[in-house]
Length: 264
Image 1 (cartoon, rainbow, N blue to C red):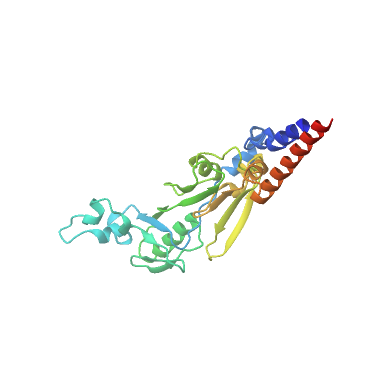
Image 2: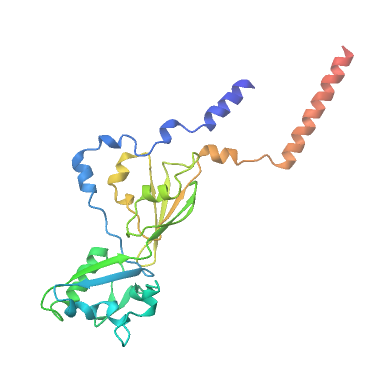
């Protein structure tokens, strides 16, 4: 009985080797880490809210390509919606087909493009058709967020104001994994630009994760942390019928033992 109890305790405890993140990552070659520093651009998806700013040496020439130009009242004062803190009119909503409505240029399809590709594409639509000098275009995501569920201390929505987020940052902002979270099988559910979904699994114990393309998240990713075997065992309960049956057997054994004792 004692040996069985000890065995159950030992199998219920999570191995200490399964708890640390990125084991031995400090021994990754410098050239491998340097290559990974070139982080992946986020991809523009339907439903994204984008802030797009066009700039150049001639401010008057680029002004028509910025939404702020069209939020000025007749008396040249800024619209009340902007001064009151409501900047939603400054943003571009990517529709279900991946299009935005851009000043002077009309409908532009940018869904599925990376951030840098979108900037280059918009600049190419302006120059040389409208300007003699190629403008600079900056795209910023206003609603970049992911979701964490499962064995994390604070599951829910995780926002990234700078439009970039990696897996460890999302986990950190969720209060880290619980001790009963399975670290070697983290699931990432992703909605692609065409509406399809993909599922990937990553291993937080593996040092190569930080140089993997899966390390950087895309907006609306869902990170699911599965419970480990210890959590699964602790959540199991004995059915009431079985509990009653075991209790009855125990009672019968006690009575039989008492009778045997009396007859000796």
